[in-house]
Image (cartoon, rainbow, N blue to C red; front, side, top):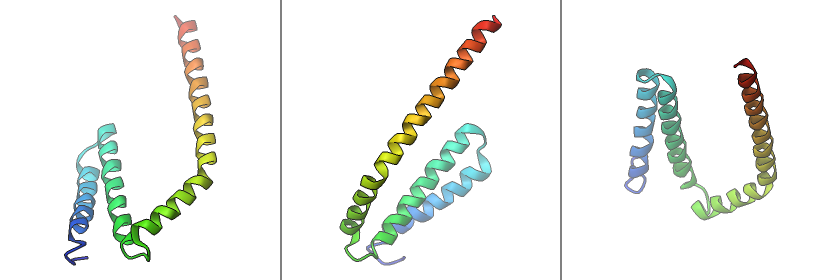
Length: 103
């Protein structure tokens, strides 16, 4: 972790870990939640890049695997997004219908 070529990502990983803990224990509410999630994503990305650097093929091999995963998961992700959009539209229409009848 402390080799010269990985030192930059070590600092990013440890810094994002500290930010995650700091935001978790000091900031509350929705803004705190968003800050914790963004710091967690930064932490995950730094860890993934660090682990990828040990794989044979490195980033090129990982990119190939990600493209293959995207091809397999794209129909599922798009279907989930469509269902979520339909559910949100239904909830919004019910909410507006309920608020207009109450007035």
